[in-house]
Image 1 (cartoon, rainbow, N blue to C red):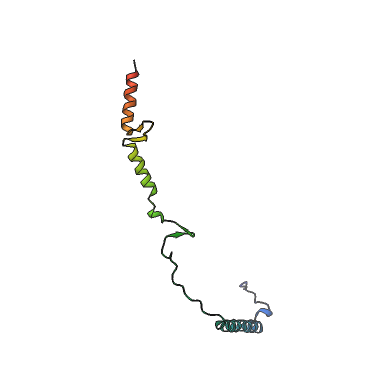
Image 2 (tube, rainbow, N blue to C red):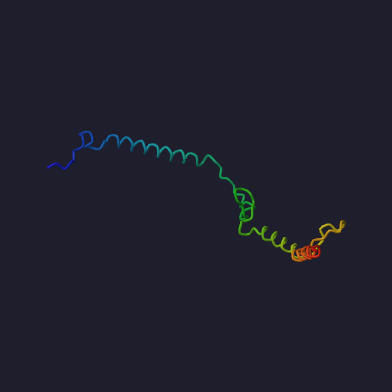
Length: 120
């Protein structure tokens, strides 16, 4: 009865011990060299004096451009409120020319009354 299992070839039956030892030794040499370089460089450079926190620390900033967070941005609602107020009040457009603006409701009433008066 065959299970379909074939044993590996002879060269794969043992771990390559010599190759593992060489790679491990090379890794240890590299780590030791890196540690020596770090130790050697510690005394060569003077510590950098701290100048404290930057003056702009804590201000809203996006992508190096000072901006207000979107949640605090209220320009559009203020503009809309100003436009609504202008549509509902009287005021001067050009005082020298005598041009005024009327509330929209009043202007529509005047247009309708002028049209009704013009009908025969």
